[in-house]
Picture 1 (cartoon, rainbow, N blue to C red):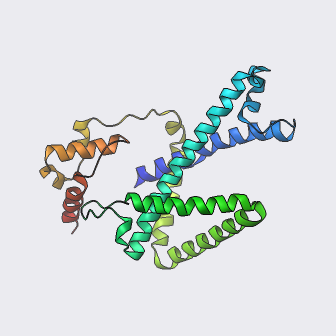
Picture 2: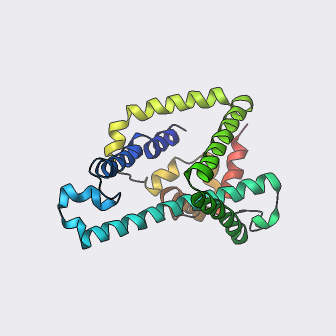
Picture 3: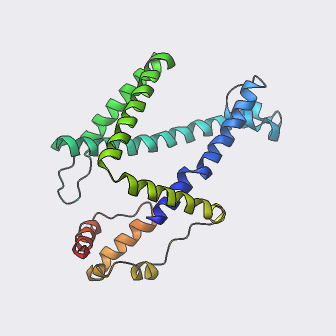
Length: 238
């Protein structure tokens, strides 16, 4: 839990927002004080002079657009998958999932339907302007967030969560410098195996290898190992 909080704050805390703020300030300064175009190339003028006005500037802007599209695509991809999972958990609509009882996941039809719904609302919001669609969605999002927070405070483990949140924030601050300059290096397979729960020693070697792959690689697969892992871990709970 401590590691989860520490690295969550690393990826979504001061480190990440420092990058966003630096980029935003660089663009805003030249756009609103120098009356220059609000483009990525504008922020590079102090470094390259007039060069960004030509082919270099075009390349920078194209890369900026591509990077933005890829970033938004990743966010939408995770959001669509979560939306389908959530609707299925509440409604139990079978066609939203792939029908696999062992490792259920959103079906292609479910993902496409959710993506179509989200993109339709996004397009309607964008073309209706800031004062209408975007404003209404923002206000609705704020109201739903408050309702979710109140529900969590009343029915959830609010005191425990806030305590862990505070401890995690302090831990992140104490390790701020270390996290800033620490290069990620996964554990070796031997050390990883040695740190696993006792009950997992009975798992086949290929399952442990699958778990290690999923824990150390973004492309690892836990489809085979997860059911056995959950079963064994639940057996250890008194």
